Length: 80
Image (tube, rainbow, N blue to C red; front, top):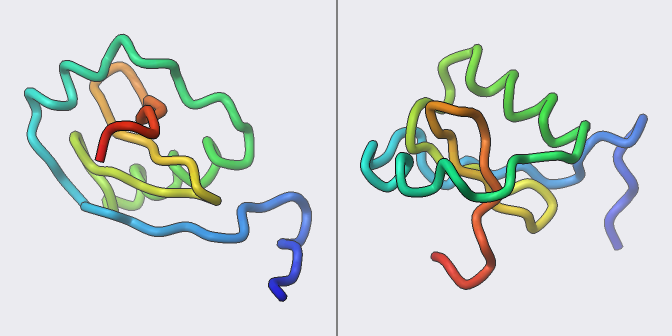
């Protein structure tokens, strides 16, 4: 049984890849933007610490995000 994270922070954060294909990132720019405030805080921190860059993918509590030039985008579940 996993414990709840304090102060509403995500319980699970996994960097799936640090950088990726800029063309894939460009194709995802029209996907829905990340909107979960706690997730955005983590995603921005990873970006500003240079842990993840353009095309990078991060999974937070089962939601997968892709770093694009226009911000973090939610990756649809059917995409790998």
